[in-house]
Length: 361
Ligand SMILES: *[C@@H]1O[C@H](CO)[C@@H](O)[C@H](O)[C@H]1NC(C)=O
Ligand SMILES: *[C@@H]1O[C@H](CO)[C@@H](O)[C@H](O)[C@H]1NC(C)=O
Ligand SMILES: *[C@@H]1O[C@H](CO)[C@@H](O)[C@H](O)[C@H]1NC(C)=O
Ligand SMILES: *[C@@H]1O[C@H](CO)[C@@H](O)[C@H](O)[C@H]1NC(C)=O
Ligand SMILES: *[C@@H]1O[C@H](CO)[C@@H](O)[C@H](O)[C@H]1NC(C)=O
Ligand SMILES: *[C@@H]1O[C@H](CO)[C@@H](O)[C@H](O)[C@H]1NC(C)=O
Ligand SMILES: *[C@@H]1O[C@H](CO)[C@@H](O)[C@H](O)[C@H]1NC(C)=O
Image (cartoon, rainbow, N blue to C red):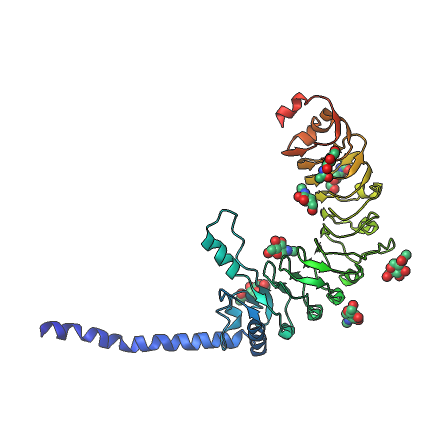
């Protein structure tokens, strides 16, 4: 008896506070959702979601009536509440030895299905990332070219197929365009002419059967990074690269270029960080290389003495060319020796012993 009279007052006195806590939370959360997610944008996102296939229910937070600014992958402007960014890349791919369950989780995290043009309702969308998903049967849709506010557009390795819609060239604010790794076709590069803000272009592995090089084309953009590996750019060396004054990363490997390496290319007023010209049929001599980090000239027909490396380089691939001359010239130069980590030079016409200086590498 004494025990019950002593314990009952405690819950009774707490009762009003317990009632207050949900009330505070409700009004707080409600005010927040009013402030952020815009209803028409929420509906557009839900419509977009309804056409997707999402095996692992990655977008489970995308529900009717919710604050879409808190949904996974959605970034809103912090004061206007407009949806600014959609980041919908899946889990990153596990390494080859990962357990089966990890691979299963990865495959289930891939989005697929159809992409609904309801995204056009997101008038303030500046960044769209659908990379690494699995849209295996569909084309890159024309409506993407109407998302005028895009500065960042990434569909890399998302298994899109077919023709690149040329109206993507209307995206004049685009700074980053990554369509690499898809099975795409394009009849010409002309549409890229509209992309006047471009800094980063990756169209590698696209198939450009009918591209006829137009030597008078001057691109309207200055890119820092261009990846056109596995495009059919050749047989002439792409002249328009002459106008790229900011380029530091260039991959035009396997691009069907069977031309003499133009001297202007090696004299561009820029220092490459990464340069991949591998697997073309480039000819001519290269005396100096001013590239940091990586250069791949393998599988070409370069002749003449081994190039002099003017910068500190970590990876140098020269295999399968006809470079001649002595080995020591290449690797005993004080500056190139500093950081070179990997050198592939097999299948050339090099003579001479491996010099002592190699030991200092
Ligand atoms: C909103 O974003 C701007 C710019 O990104 C930032 O300067 C500002 O501090 C942010 N405001 C809030 C309330 O987070
Ligand atoms: C596009 O996405 C892929 C994979 O998520 C990433 O590796 C790549 O760097 C992205 N491209 C750009 C321009 O950010
Ligand atoms: C968009 O691109 C298409 C196809 O390239 C072109 O016909 C059209 O005029 C462009 N629209 C605008 C507004 O630039
Ligand atoms: C190159 O393309 C431009 C722009 O499309 C065109 O005006 C010009 O006639 C073309 N030149 C050649 C040689 O095909
Ligand atoms: C250069 O490109 C080729 C073909 O696309 C690729 O196999 C190779 O790994 C690249 N080299 C480097 C150093 O990245
Ligand atoms: C190599 O490039 C750097 C940076 O652009 C430049 O300062 C330097 O003069 C170049 N070296 C030669 C020998 O061209
Ligand atoms: C590299 O060159 C050798 C001949 O020097 C040739 O037999 C071989 O096929 C070449 N490798 C490739 C991948 O083309």
